[in-house]
Image (tube, rainbow over all chains, first blue to last red; front, side, top):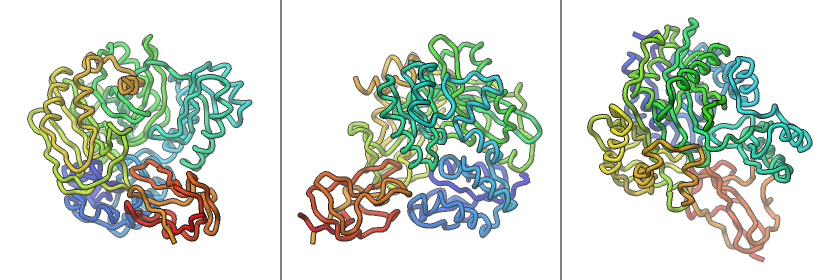
Length: 448
Length: 79
């Protein structure tokens, strides 16, 4: 039995259901917290209890820290699981949860503070001896930026220190563009994140996005659960994720995983987290950022390691040690995750809320579908567009991809356009089948 | 009295960011093509633009309110 007794699930959709399931399997009661739009949702029905947060817009429900704390107290929870997005990387919220005498199922608030500020995270990684993408500290104005850029070289990116989810990033090709882009990026960062701090980072062209899953407990145990390749992205939004990374040589794998563990240990990490790197064509790799939460793509790691990452989060939050040591974590097979979003790829990926009239899910060996929805559910305009994650595992990568193709053929979603058809075309592509992709690949592919 | 309708469902905003001034104040004028509001749908922000020039009489929604597709969002006097 877990030391935790009752967890408030402060999120929605597939991750809320994922947490509800992990709680039940760990002998913990799960309380759903829901907005008006989610009153009748599947994860709310499957929880032991449910508390209403507020109106449908996220700012009036899932992002309202006061409402979530009230729900936690009223429901008698002894812990809060924030999922991903919303309040999951909000240090102030995590602190308030702890001050209320509850466990926060996430990273320590001070670590969220440090790693949530991307400029501070780069500094911290350098201090830990982890290689970082060449770049600057915070730049205040165009003159400072020009001076820093002269050292870094072009093309580069202006990035919001407080950014996340691919937002607050702007490319700059030459010094002339810097004068235009910098003030706009600062204004956008202020508007989006309440913090106008920006810094510069060199563009590593044709790099792969490789990220390492780490787990840590309060007793100094830090382990990695190997890496994921998330190079198939559109506007820095991931669309396909794999574990392990295709054709990654053993030396690079072991080096990149060791750096991730070193950084997590250096910051006193606790819980599940992800250290993101760019892997250049010449084999060198650089720290990009750390996500101090469970991630959307965590299932591919679960499929190839046999770990239950959410159960480990709950254990650690309850004050227990990790259930596994590093030498017990081995890679077995290959897994791929396809994000099924309510978007129209034929029409600029236009978000498309609406009612899912049919939702027939695939099955068979090695097929896992994580979704919070059922047929007849309305895909709401208030939240992100993800309907489901299709996760396929095989003894090797070709088998995982073959199962993904078959699963897509069995899948039927009507009522809203989705990215399913796009995935079918991508899985037929030679580059993708060979694993010869990089972070700019999908946009080049789409441009034809 | 004419109205401008929402072209998509989502969350309605009168200003580009919480701290910023509204795009157009009640009683203020606007030009054809000018942005008068934002609608957030699935975490993307879409500008609502005026087809013609005119005067904005009053908003029918508060910042952060839900809006349905085709719902009247603002009353205008066409110029």
